[in-house]
Amino acid sequence: MKSSRLIYIILVGIVLVLVIFIAKESFFQPGMERFEGKYEELETYRNENNTGPIVRLYAVKVLDNSKGWMEEYGNSLPHTKYGRTMVFFFEGEIDQDVSLSPKEPYYPDGLNPYLIASYEKTPMGEVRFKLENE
Image (cartoon, rainbow, N blue to C red; front, side, top):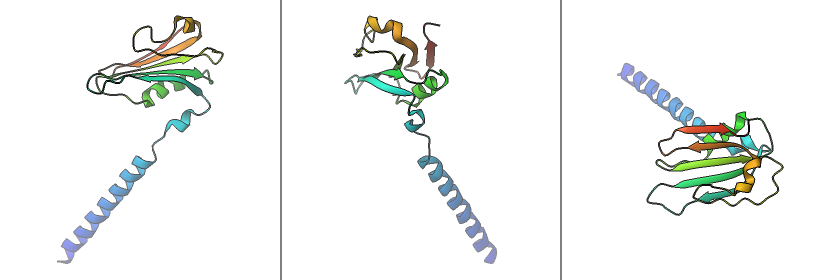
């Protein structure tokens, strides 16, 4: 009787440790604050289609020119299965308003000289990150 009670206490202890570990990992994930000071969101677009592929477009003004964080930023944005998420990174010197549209080209052609990089997550989850003008 004592050995079954000991086993029960050990199992309860293991379960409690696992629950605490899972809760800690769930609530303390890094968020978008890790990108603060590196970008300014210029424009977003999401189509109204809730039954088919969802298209998400983001235009971002880059304040920190290091390329490493850009792909990580794209990976942290929402993506829907069979949907498409695209992020366009523009130089900090951009002074024009950006208007995004659901069809190519997704932004006005006059902004091409300011484009630094583009990020795309395809409908099947494949990531494409491309540095422009280099």
